[in-house]
Image 1 (tube, rainbow, N blue to C red):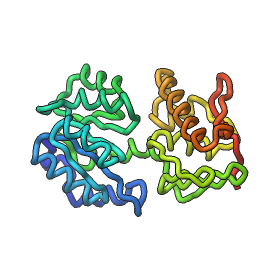
Image 2 (image 1 turned 30 degrees about the horizontal axis):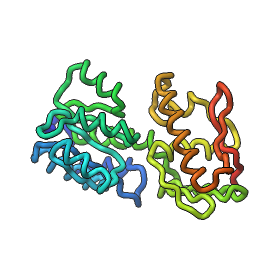
Image 3 (image 1 turned 135 degrees about the vertical axis):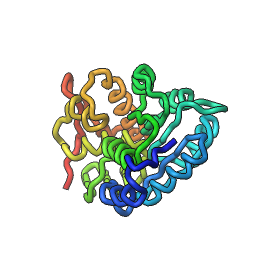
Length: 255
């Protein structure tokens, strides 16, 4: 259950904080809430509605998996203990195919479970009861790491590449490139530093806030996926190059 006692912030305060710190005033980020308790679902929806988020809910993991392609959420809030498909199974299935941000929201407080969830790819773990203000700030913090937003559009005329940071739109040689949040985060980092090298350490810190070398394989996979998507438009493009033992760079210069 969500904590509604005096130790947590009231709904009006949570909404105010969310509006002040939300990532983009004109963008409504979408949350998929996978939770079987109706009272918790109702209250979480109220909290995030006042903070300018859109919340779609599913009562269990099976329904959550079904709703993923229908909803296209920016982030998932996931309970672990549910009937008809638990959160562990859903987290595992998400990580098999996607780097979609996931925050675990569970009454299970044992350190072993927290470590297990993070090792399986969860981006954060919140133990219940949940404080209104905390859950908003945790969501904002994860989105800041996975969706880098600012007021700029970068244009690379020679490569015919346009990157819109607020809308997360990427146009390459006249075609829209559909990217996951973390794919976009890597491209955004490379674009801002282009044509300079972005180190492995920088990418780990910007995407996960963690400099662990264990994340290196995930970066390699994301870069591989990015390259494939660009090469579907122009196989000779070779936009992203590897700099041996250092990192990656976008082989382009913006206006």
